[in-house]
Amino acid sequence: MNVPEQSKNDDSPEYKMSSEDLDFYYGDFKALNNVTMGFKSCEVTALIGPSGCGKSTFLRCLNRMNDLIPISRVDGKITLDGENIYLPSVDVVMLRRKVGMVFQKPNPFPKSIFDNVAYGLWVNGIKDKAFVRDCVEESLKRAAIWDEVKDRLQDTALGLSGGQQQRLCIARALAVKPEVVLMDEPASALDPIATQKIEELIHQLKEMYTIIIVTHNMQQAARVSDVTAFFYLGKLIEAGDTDSIFTRPTKKQTEDYITGRFG
View 1 (cartoon, rainbow, N blue to C red):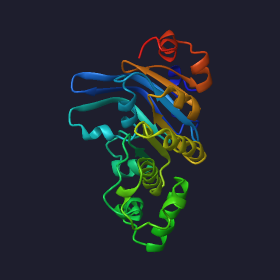
View 2: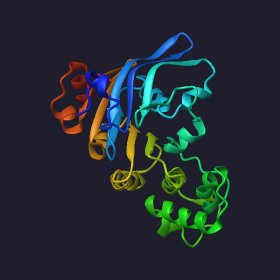
View 3: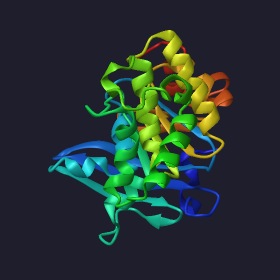
View 4: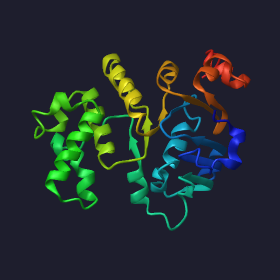
């Protein structure tokens, strides 16, 4: 079970990734306050909480996406396999290969389906056509979309449905062989059938990846996650086994949010 108090041994091999005493600032505004938690291999962790609570900000700290904001600043540390990802020596491009990201809105490139998935491989200098072709097929299969697109790989990705585009974006993230997959509300823009496919896919992918998902949908968090973390006003209020968080929360703020008293 992941709880805020675990902090001091979060660098142990038990955790694939962890944060310790993490503070994050947008200019003078402190968006995250002393966030400490760990993420185990082959588990799904859901980050829940009201809008503006810091959960998406925290997610973006995990692969340094917030580095793109000039006025941002991080204190504390985040580790991947025990190594601090905020050290100056860290290659951020390599980090983002290991810690992939799937965004809220499907964002396929205006290229073919094949080129969308192969793009990350090409950017990383992989030129072997047979290897790229095999990797594209494997990634599309893992993203549960191969059977739907295998006969039109050269068609534009923009012609796919919203749910298909999101699974294509997941395939694109998987193609570069990440170890951790971050998902920022990956189904919020999708219809119920497409949402169900994404949730089923998350269940399949956790056999191979550490998955961290931000969701506003508490029913979705309950369905897909092993661990749930509740954020409020930039703080991690409580984290633990999903069933316990939803049925026996230890913090009143967590209970109030889950039961709909606020948020």
